[in-house]
Image (cartoon, rainbow over all chains, first blue to last red; front, side, top):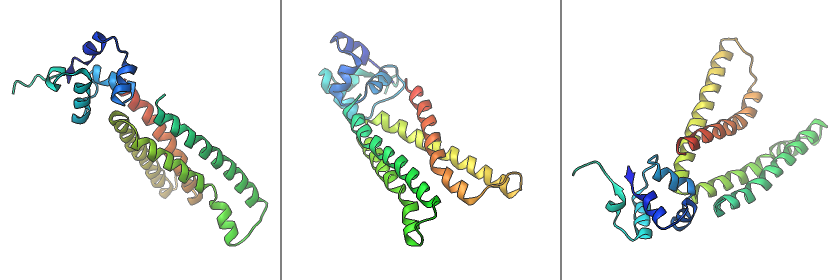
Length: 66
Length: 131
């Protein structure tokens, strides 16, 4: 799944490790989400949205028009 | 390194050291020919105790891992277990056809080390997949 995670993280000047610490996940998990190798669960997606103060659908982008 | 992995190493390393010490000690003692009876069985089984501690450390680290780490563990355990199962099944078929000779003791002894090695290799592969 495409996401704006890297863009939002870099805008705040955070490293992957910084973000991983805030989300209580490994740096590898943040990297895997950014490189679209892993889609986060709904609870993790909500935590990510909360950290960035945005709605989930503005961070995670889907090709599905519905 | 995350706190959960530091705790894992704190639990895993002493348990493995205990295992190595007990297996060397128990084999040496049994080869000397004593003790006998129930005590002999107890001494032979002593190395299993630290393995229980290793298992506890592994369960705790998996429970406290994040969701991607748990997925990697699941893939590694599944691939590792099935690979070992297939290898031992194949070896059993070859032994049944008298192509190779196997003793029950060697099979029983090598299952756990083979499982650990196979899991380790599968985990390296799974980690690379999500890198």
